[in-house]
Length: 351
Image (cartoon, rainbow, N blue to C red; front, side, top):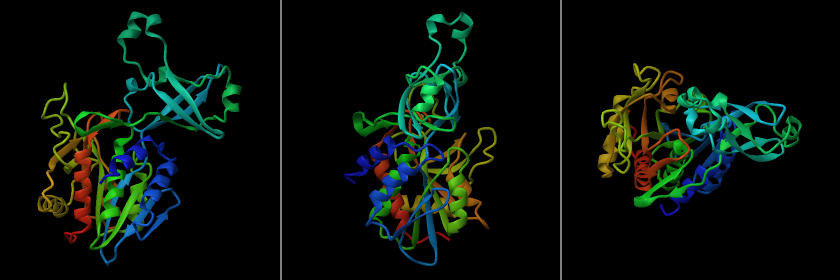
């Protein structure tokens, strides 16, 4: 487990917006070479590592993409307007350092907005939305921006390093879902599977579960699992009934997820799969939490609906401040997720 934190660091600090995940995939291949039976990459960019054998297969998916931005327009003075890729709370954006991924390489910039000092009283009372922001790369004209290799459609990511906090906590960007990727990498490295295991590192989860949709169809697994982050509410201004999951209390087994008003569009896990995950955790003395998650879902939703249907479930990592650029999790929880995923790979499938 000694290198788990370093794998998380490399994956977190890498840049992989939806549709541009190759840097993350290359890191994962480097970590898994010599530890799996083989790799495959499909035409969309999903990375599939496989290990073990048998007629029945287990697919475990973690998504490589992160919430990000994309160049929408460039004005005559060289300022860049952008659109969002994935669910981003607008107020988090202003003042962030960014990287624009242009044709000539990476270009650094910052997200700016009108200074509060010159706002009218009415403007100050309003929430600052992303359409009132822009990216400043230091250019003086649109021609200079284009000379840098930047054009409409270029991806933009936030630039942020992983930081170690007290009590075994770490903070960084894109833990959703690079933490899941790190856990899956470590688990398949160490596991001695009892069936054929497909560790699938998916693309474009943040914009519609697209990678899991096609890989679930192609692999046709017997059982599907997604490993992702989930919302920890153990901090100020959150009531226990709103988000009862706590950092440090172990992996989360999802009992249901979906839209806030109805849980539609999400996952009701197969009961036998959910019980199987809980049984493996108990057998391996891994503490776990159960959660009904309103307001989100995972790749398991897409896997479940592949072909004739795939019995599916979710293992999640408790994470504070999800979908910000400073998410916080416990390395102890991450290690326990690794142990749980190993246990699933090394157990008889439940169906």
